[in-house]
Length: 368
Image (tube, rainbow, N blue to C red):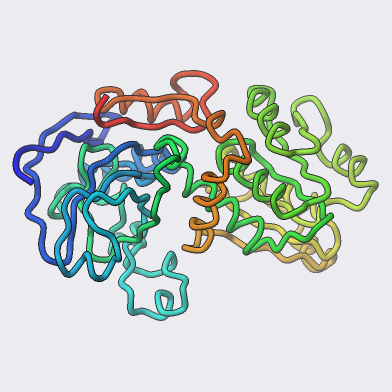
């Protein structure tokens, strides 16, 4: 490919600058993706606030769907894709040979860990790292030799395909890690895109009681949770959370509690209180500050299993793409806002709760 690539670059002090980059030379083991749409993950907001300060300017966005527009011969053989194929990318760029990669847990590979400053991944790598096009808020995105692909069926709208990673998280957390069984009770804290994905996954798994909690401002999201299959929703500003869950479960409490709340760390304490004896708790929402003091004896008195979750497996994203393609759920109702490259700042502030109202899942269209 010849010419220029336009992208939105995240800078310090909450600034976005639309820039042009030279189209990169594509080596035999790499490729180039023409971006259709990129979802705005909730993690893009803290990345935007913090990462440009420590890592330099960057192109955010890692929920990318597009067409392979150029591919090296070695890459084509390795990836099993060809020019013109429609794919969704995972954010991870694993090394492929460490213990975690070899055992299928490549999301734990150190090469993907941008928090420790040594790894690279899509949507959180500086443009100072060649060839710069590491994020989806761009017309084209570089395909690294270790990129992880998922085929996207032709009939799936791009905006829905960008939900493959969030929905993959829900499937990972509810089914693969949470091991929900038919008839079990599940409490999901937080009705954002991740929480709604967990509702769908819990419904698919056959949960007998799906309870979603949120705030008064979440009324539209809670209504969508019920449409997706939640049996009960609780506005915790109006009702006592523990008492209401006890009433809904006949005092049994939850077999599984999934904390997807983006608010304060007090949600971690409530998750522990909501679980039944012998219950499971998955902590999935990053808090950014310490959990307030609580009685840790709760853990052994109630014989609880508590697990922190990081992202999704390859299997979960494959299952998510199949579920989206099935059309069983009105996924389009999660897709609330669309932005062009000139409005990426608006997209980020909207996801961060400071922009447009009633957002669930936002997308960037780099051609708009």
